[in-house]
Image 1 (cartoon, rainbow, N blue to C red):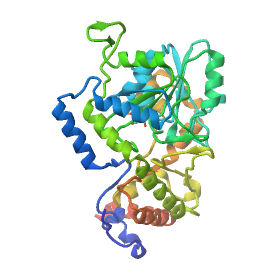
Image 2 (cartoon, helix red, strand yellow; image 1 turned 120 degrees about the vertical axis):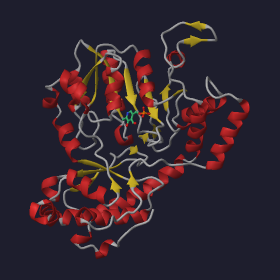
Image 3 (cartoon, rainbow, N blue to C red; image 1 turned 180 degrees about the horizontal axis):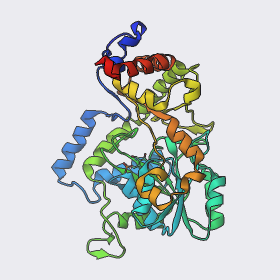
Image 4 (cartoon, rainbow, N blue to C red; image 1 turned 90 degrees about the horizontal axis):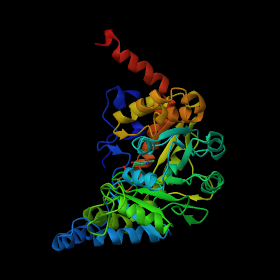
Length: 412
Ligand SMILES: Cc1ncc(COP(=O)(O)O)c(C=O)c1O
């Protein structure tokens, strides 16, 4: 990653949004893939090609499942081709029906996985401090139509597993967790993965460790694991016998090869993220109105998501202005997650009144900003980016004025 001008010299005219050169000449992406040891990946792929076993319960998938189950201290791991398919077969295997309660402040795959199965998502608001679904709100939303609870471990933080498990037990509801962000994370000293009926990790390329694409369903319930295995393979039990409805959600061997190679390097990826997070914490300290989100005490996260909350009034700059101005400098910051799922077309049309009960989700989705981290990001780049953010925030008013001048007809 090369940088352009030194920020200490940056006058306003030096800013890329005002016509200067970009500060970062190679774009900085959120979720740039972390790549493990290439030689290990290639050796696995060579062996796979030699064996001509490319998919269907291959040895690499079995090894991948054992490694994930061990890392997350659960009895069973069922690998899938992605987390969305994993969520869907888990939802089906758990027999969820009718309405399912979930947060709106999540990636849309959480909601889609329900709606695709003709279930009705009931969006729940989140806690402003943690960004996680609030169990007290979940309880208020439970009705005789409720057929399940789908918690999301957003940013790798545990979504109230104890309180939601109590609620699910009391109301005899299946409880599933979307743990797409939670690889390598723990809660109160225990790896995430063993709560509720099942939890689903993502190994998408943009996640902390990837299998190109991939998912993993974790459970301590052997009967459920057996059902999930059949469901992901067209419902087959053995070679010719189909005894339940199934689909093709199998992870191919080449993905397991990448998944295993990534898992070997997971601790290294997390330690780079931790170093970057510490640099962000230091670089952003004292910036008015710009708050770095921290996981609650008791949660050990993988720091794969560096999330800011930008309070426009206090910061003097809006989240969306920062996104545009950073983009010009080569920083592809993302609005994770914006808008809340309830404002996306399929859901807005079905429940137009949902926004009334989701004020925190609406506020957060207008304020959050995800910044780049991972092994493609150096601590020096984080420091430079923090200085840039401070500069943009401190000079927001004159930047805005110059932008107006540049676009006014007399500037032409
Ligand atoms: C919270 C959440 N759930 C589900 C998914 C879907 O995962 P996948 O891309 O593996 O299907 C993602 C991200 O990609 C996610 O961020």
